[in-house]
Length: 375
Image (cartoon, rainbow, N blue to C red):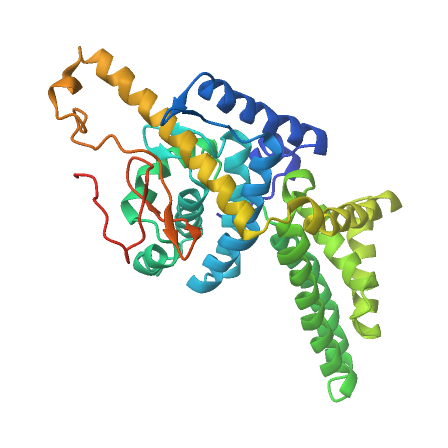
C-alpha cells in the first residue's frame, strides 16, 4: 500500500527489513538456496537423482519471470502503475526469503504461481477493486484456487510488510515542487508562450523519470539496495543528462535535483547513485538474460524439486498415520491424490510449461486430455 507517513524513511519497516547492500543481498539468496538444497539432499525421483538449482540459476529464473512474465501479465491486465510497481517489488522480496524449489503445505513456490499471488496481494493493498481474476487465470494459466492456496505462504515470505515506499512516490514530491514553481511563472506571465511550455516541460520530465523507474530501476535490484529518495533523485539526474531531454526539461531536472540534494543535505557523492543504478541496468542482458529453452529447463528442474518435497511430505504423513495411505489404491494416497511424477508435456518437439494442480504438479495444457487429481 502506498505509504503516506511523515516519519523518516530510516525508521520504516522497509528500511529496517528490506534494505540490503549488494553483498548482503547475494548472501541472503545463497543462504535460501543452500537451505533448499539441504532439504533435497539424498532424494531422487523416478530412479534418477534430482539436480537442484544453484543460487545463480535461481536468480536467472526469478529474473526471467520478473522482467518478462510479470511485466507482460501486468500489461495484459492493464493494472495501474502503482499496482504494477508494488507487485514487482513484492515478487523480488518473496525470493529473498524463499527458494523457487521450496514446497510448503500451501503448495510449491512456483514462480508462475507466486507471480499471480503477488498481483492479487498488490491489488488488495493498493485497493484496486476491479481486478478480473478470470482474465488473470486465463493469461497466466494458473487456477485461482492455486493462487489462494499459496497466498498465506507468500504473505509470510513478505514478513507481512505490505506498506511499500516506492521511488515514484518520492518523485511525486519533487515534481510537485517543480509544478509549483511553474505555476508561479504562469501567474507572472499568463499570456506568454513560455508559460504553456513550462507546464509541458514538467509533464515531459515526469514521463522521462517514470520511464527510468519502470525500466532499469524496476528490472534490477535497485529497490532493494537504494532508498526511494535516492532512486527518485537518480531519475531526475538521469533526465537531466539524457540526450533525449530537451534543454528546457534538462534545466528543470537540474533545478529539482539540486533542490532535493540541498533539502536533504546531500553531498555530490549522491550522484554515484545514477552510476550504480545504470550499471545494474547495463548488466541485465549479460547477467540476467535467459533464452526460452534455458528458462524451460530451469523451470522443469524446479518442478522436479517440488515433486520430491511433495513426495517426502506425503511419506511423512503416511508414517504419522500408521500406514493409512497404504489402504488406498496402488496409485492413490490417503487423500485420494494420484502419486504422480513431475512431468512436462510435448508440443511440436518443444517442452510446454503447463498449468499446475493444487499439489504443485504440472498438468497438461487444456488443449490436451489429461487425468486430473480428485478434488
